[in-house]
Image 1 (cartoon, rainbow, N blue to C red):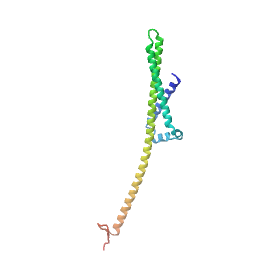
Image 2: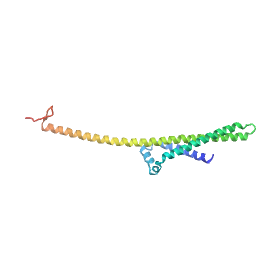
Image 3: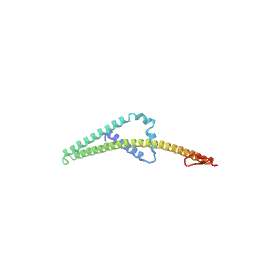
Image 4: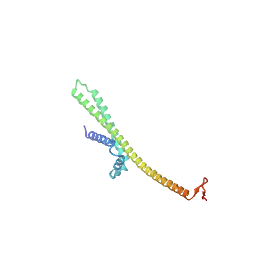
Length: 177
């Protein structure tokens, strides 16, 4: 396995580990938001779209290269006669198998890259929604408190009006003689 495919395989392992960690319910959405909006990651935030697309293009190129090699070794295997050159045939099959592994690795890396992008964007979106929800809850609680105070004032003024005099149906006060 060449260096590029070794790097890609480690990248797939790191992506899989990161996806599993992000799926753990132990870490709250707010904590993920703080992690993803940390100072270190904020430096890359302005150009994250460019980094994502460049790496996405690189993974596409690796997938195309792996497919090309896979096709090349499949045709090579057909051109070698197993009875005449058994060692060459086995070598051809080994190369074909490695190219199939490389194709699978690059396809897996590409898939996990898209999954990670979706998970990060949905976690950030959910964190913002929860923040907006908490702001709205605070506003509703404040309005409820103000409404309760207004009802208390209204009931206390109504009670004071009944004590000082009787209130008629039309709302005018009539003093008792």
